[in-house]
Image (cartoon, rainbow, N blue to C red; front, side):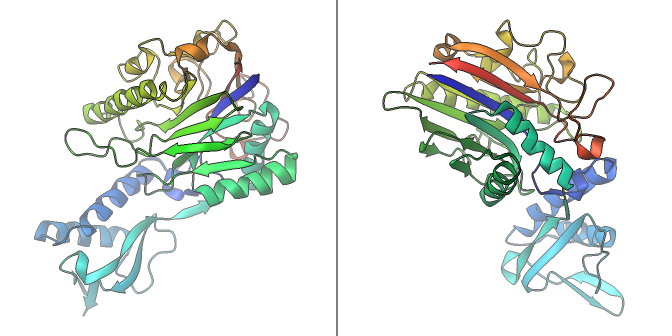
Length: 365
């Protein structure tokens, strides 16, 4: 049977944190870091004086304690019960002593994705028409279902009967999921896996989807989205990404007990020659870029597609390598008119489906 699979970082389908928008720059990264810091602090049973000092400092930056917080603040306080802050006589204090005194959390302000960008995301998918699509940076399963019904079906008459997203560890709503023409008859999450230090291994998740292709054949698809270099690529960030790769590699190898056909796919945020990717290319596993049909002049999958921008992968088990017939990259949803001709509906950066490109592969299994 013929099987086409693909991976595509969609950069969210309908909404995206304003802090991650083009042009947000260092201010946006600061907001992302502050958001993580705030939620880490307020989860504690007791807030130390140092914790309270940080909460007050960031309240001044974003206006959490104001009666009317700024409408353009990149980080928002969502309070359900009790009080985190109290203001009297112009002085603001942290009223809550710890988690038990109030219910609430901090959120990143969201902004709507431009419709033409969402439309062009659907166009990329429709043009390649994979049987199984690994979706990276999808907000949630309801969002993926809306995209399937209201964009793929309504605009392109191209709908998938099976849609699944497992909410992962990223509080910004950046998850990985599956659109499939074939039924998903097994799911295993690794959202709670930890490193020896006790840190959660995966930034999102490393789910295993067992997809039934026929009565005799199945394929295990393992989507992932490794730790980003956004905000810097410190030794700690590199170590986190390497730990993710090592754990994902072990998961993929064990999955061969379920089916000889195993595919680990997604945005792995590093290049093929990096220490991060090395554990994934062992014991017979290989990326589809090893096939003669893969573009050699511009092998990258992000931005302008140079070799240093190869960060999206379809990594195959040995059995899948022998079944690979052809592979390629769909770039026309990305706006670089001096490098390649985009779709006629992609007239500016604001219209592009993603700054990543869809990678696809055809198998005969």
